[in-house]
Length: 174
Image 1 (tube, one colour):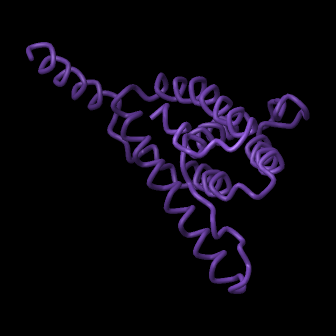
Image 2 (spheres, rainbow, N blue to C red):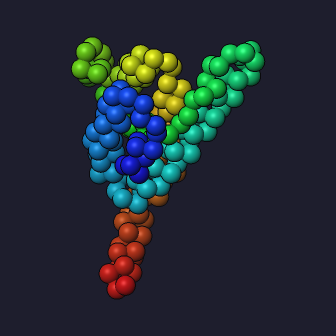
């Protein structure tokens, strides 16, 4: 999972820096999310979030394709890969817990947490030189995740711990 940021083509220093930033943010945000949920629930949440963010991305690409003229390249070569979708969903969920807490975006601008995910996507788009459609899709899924309370579809903490114990025993006998 952590090496997925290295699967994209690195055409320059900016790509290498973005891959480093992605790994750094993944290490901090995803580890906190795993501590909140527990290992099994985190694994299931990761699968749910990847499916949801990818579905949002594909829907967004279809809308862009159907609304643009045939000569436009808007979103034509966009791809959804790496850890940014998971990171942005984590950031969005965290920002919705404390919406009035101040924070800085890319170390430059101070905003309230409620605006941090949107500001971060805008900053990433500026740094990337084009709209980061995968980030927009992940942002939309992050808000939908909270609004639809998708976390309730995960097994309870008690059930997850019981399953983890069973697998732990089976593996230790192995």
